[in-house]
Length: 110
Image (cartoon, rainbow, N blue to C red; front, top):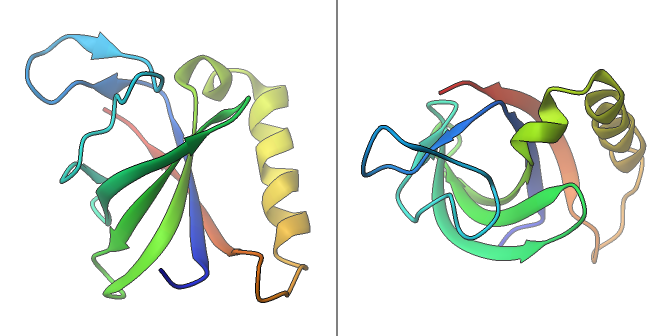
């Protein structure tokens, strides 16, 4: 996978099979699901305190990337979203072969 990354905040996530809602934990994003009409989920990579990271395919640029998704309950807190934005700004300054570059922040509403 290339060293590209994008970040997404989610207000709510649909489980893809019904109208019920699910949190980000426990594989709420399924392979093939598309976020922001741009990022197709390929597979789950890992989980941290703010959310999960997925391998995704950028449908606009036709390239693989890592997609960090923060938990829905955090996306409703301005302080958490601001922290996420600061992380994006700081991470954009880092250039190293073993560090993903962060390209943008998107908000996905379901």
